[in-house]
Amino acid sequence: MRQTDMKKLNQMYEGKAKKVFATDDPDLVIVSYKDDATALNGKKRGTISGKGVVNNQMSNQLMKMLEKNGVPTHFVEEISDTETVVKKVTIVPLEVIVRNVAAGSLSKRLGVPEGTPLRKPVIEYCYKCDELDDPMVNEYHIAAMGWADDDTMKKIATYALKIDKLLIAYFKKVNVDLIDFKLEFGKTSDGTLILADEISPDTCRFWDSKTHEKLDKDRFRRDMGGVEEAYEEMARRLQNA
Ligand code: UDP
Picture 1 (tube, rainbow, N blue to C red):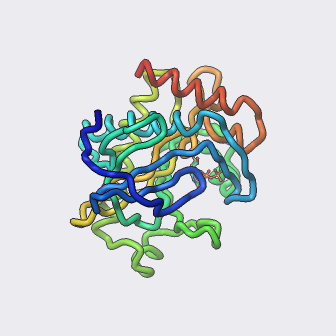
Picture 2 (tube, protein in one colour):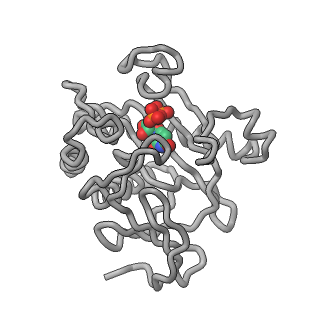
C-alpha cells in the first residue's frame, strides 16, 4: 500500500538510464530505472539485465541511510522494483565527483596508477553538458557562469565529504572499497539543497576489499564480462549491510 497519495502522469524526461514521470503533486516525480547502459558519453550502448532493479533498490537503501545521518535527499517512497517517488528538484548542473583511490580519468590525467590511495579525498566538478562531454570545471568557473552560488557550493562540498565518510564505512562492512563516485544535487521548490539522482554501480567504483575485483560499471565500460553478476553481487552484499 502506497503512503504517497499521487497519480502517475505523463513522462517528462527520458535519460540514458532513467525515465522521469510527472505526478499530480507538483513537488513529486516518479523515477523509473532502466536496464539500458551507456558509456563513453553515449558512444557505447548496451543492456545490463536486472540493472534497473539493483540500482533502484541500492540507491534507495543508501539514500535512507544518508537521511538517517543528516544528509537531506530526494528519496520519498519506493513503489515498485524499478520505480521510486522522489522530490522534484531543479538540478544544479554539476557532476560532483569524490575520489578516495586513483582510478579512471584521474589516473589518466595525472599519470597515477589505478589503485593508488589518495592522501585525502578529492572533489572534482564537471559541468553537465553532453555536447561538451561534461568538461571539468572549478569553483571559479561555476561562480563566473552562475551555475551555483558560493553558499550552495560550500554546502555541496560539505555534504559530499560527509557522504563519502558515511558510504566508506557502510561499504566496508560488506568488504567493498569505495574508490570514487559521482553525486548530483538539486533544489526543491522552496530552495532547499538536497542530494538527488542515484548512488549505484553505474555511478560508483566498487572494488572487493581483498581481491580488488571490480563490482561496478567499469566491467561494462571496459568489456570485462561478468557485468550482470557484478551488479547482483553488490545487491547481495548490501542485503547484509
Ligand atoms: N561517473 C558517473 N557519470 C559520469 C562520469 C563519471 O557516474 O558521467 C562516475 C564514475 O562511475 C566513477 C566516478 O564518477 O565512479 C569518476 O569517474 P571518472 O572521472 O574516472 O570517469 P571515467 O573514467 O568513468 O570516464
